[in-house]
Image 1 (cartoon, rainbow, N blue to C red):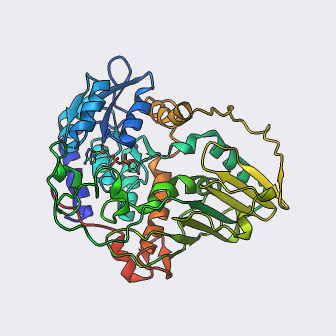
Image 2: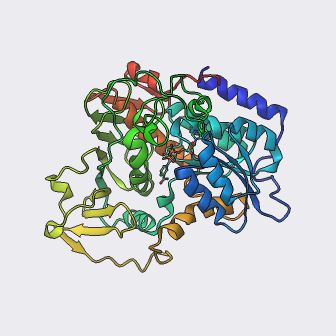
Image 3: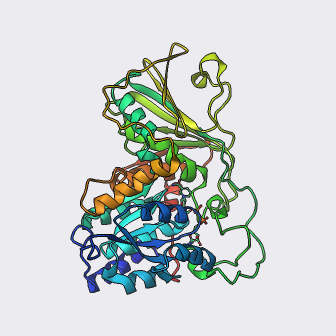
Length: 442
Ligand SMILES: NC(=O)c1ccc[n+]([C@@H]2O[C@H](COP(=O)([O-])OP(=O)(O)OC[C@H]3O[C@@H](n4cnc5c(N)ncnc54)[C@H](O)[C@@H]3O)[C@@H](O)[C@H]2O)c1
């Protein structure tokens, strides 16, 4: 089934059961937000912990295709109802839940989130928002149509250092920005052939539900679940979809970027199974009030930052952090290590002290659990009518689209692809088949 048919079918579901949108939904009688969690192992366990740490949350339902992960989550929330299949959970619980947290592998983000949003639920969805460009656009459209509270799981977006970097760039501290260079040594690539043979599916895993809308194939241990799926094109988005979303978020937000005009990925030719192992992706963007006319953004993964690059030298031969971003402006550079470190201003090869007293920011909290919870609590508060989310799907869909265009460019090594945002197509017709995907009925 094509993605668009799936979207039509879930639209029919919502036409039968008319649930109110989150803004109109009445939370539990005691005023708490009733949450349902899809995927509660790995990052889902962290999402569950952070959402549940808000006083006004009632964890109402837990869903996982792995019964071990489900049992562990339930031991922390014994009153929650438990499910293996998110479709059954969402249909059965209907108006007993207000918000859904989606923490599954990337290929299930859109199918699960779209189903929840069709039922009028607020959604917190992990990054990258989706696996395909078409899904990102569809998620944003539906969220707008239904006027839902939404947030993408890029918790560093709400951290002190990233907010400060955004304010500094927008204050013009380095003038207009010419280039951003960002890097990560992580390597979610895979050079090998398609897995052969099969292994017995462990008793704790429902393999059909794990595959969800992805094409059927035999289970192989240590290839897909848990976590390894992000190397494989059918399920993840490689290193760009993992660290790229986090590290790109601040430049994207600070420079008020839209989607890019051109994308070039200098990498080896992938085998079609996994992502290229080392990507150097250059994006050219339409200029904004914070950039020069020919602004570009360059991403390096696998080996991290190029060691001798003249724009990446730190004062006193200091070593670059293994992950981070450098804004290179007309009047200096702003260096932003990833993560929980202050941005640093470099002018003429020297660090320069910055006066940040004009910015209205609370002091940083150098504790990941407390700092990290802010992004989740912002979502809960917005669902309860207090304030707004800072990474709603209107923002997250554009950021994700940008990331996914770089992922697609990895299928066409060393070739510049031209993106027409208004038509949502590449000039290079051969790249367009990767904007969408087939959905298996499961
Ligand atoms: N924001 C962050 O800092 C951060 C960090 C790590 C991962 N992530 C994101 O979180 C998501 C999960 O990544 P992970 O590393 O935890 O993966 P994982 O494979 O370790 O865990 C995924 C969990 O979801 C469950 N699951 C899989 N398919 C499911 C389905 N159809 N229905 C219900 N449960 C299902 C799995 O059993 C497992 O418990 C990814 O999108 C990833 O990009 C975000």
